[in-house]
Image (cartoon, rainbow, N blue to C red; front, side, top):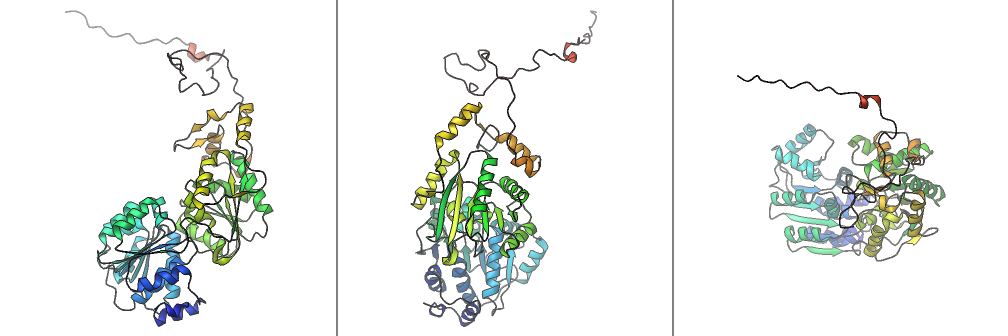
Length: 487
């Protein structure tokens, strides 16, 4: 089947041919005819299958008749991140070359004034992130009563980022008679509830099993110690030993770890840039463009780069951290092995990642092979006991995550902005002298013989020891209280 068989207009077909595409992907082949019939569509497809063109091309055909009015866009496309929104704008510019349509991009990090000016002139296609869209609406600069087509893209990513309440609010503000095109790579229960509430008798299209991974991707697991400097060393060895490495994306769970890994790789002579949500929009765009143009070889990123970004030829993906949500693993490794190309992924695993790894293998329905020796969970338990830092002494930081005995020190170094050299050096030994004295009763021990919550806090610390500072021994003279004489 070719694009000419899908019912697209001549202008759209000419633009598609000019872009060099001749055959639609499965999701495009199934979704476009239903969208042209103004049916609600629920599309489930793994990342990299051409979902953007599946809604862009029929929208261009439908928008050939009609005219936009000031502050009343005709169509609305919701994206979870600024990068995805900008990418959809590029698609409309490319495929809409033969159309005279006004397209507005409403995202954070850009001047409100410029965006208001575009809305005032009237837009046919409004591409937005939920937060900035609601900001314009609450300022009275935008009306959603003229929306004919609503597109919700990467819905499961919206869920992960906490946008579902905003999506529900927006869906209630647009006309009940609008057409809704809903796309997601996975279908957790919350997304299914959203579909049941806001889509009207949708056509369900599923071109790949939900949460499946592409068959062109080679997946491997690599064992590592729990310390961050151990993981960074494993990562460097993976990069140096990778076969046919053209470029690679390295994913971290936390934004602060993105910065640490980026500095570490830079210090060791790698060509690398960072991308995470705390960067300003200009820096994010520049980092992405440098990676796309092969100006740098490595991109260290948070999950802001895991969904839908069009980087067609990424040879390797390295997971520095095992993702907290198994769906994120599918999206991360989906950055490689696109359009039938071969891809390679490796994930660094520690003994703390056993549950998260089991959830990933359960969701994808296939075990992931180990590269080298598999992880021995007992080995991680023995060494801390020999060094005096057992697993039972793990603390929890302010966000409720387990951390090793040295984790707090390393986090402190990150926040204090120490150099990568300091971040990569091994932790200093603990010189505190343990004591064999039992703690005073009543504070640490319970009368019923059960262990108190402080029993495993490790060695006690004596305050000043045998030395008492002189200021403590100084006599303190309190002022005498004034007395009132009896009358």
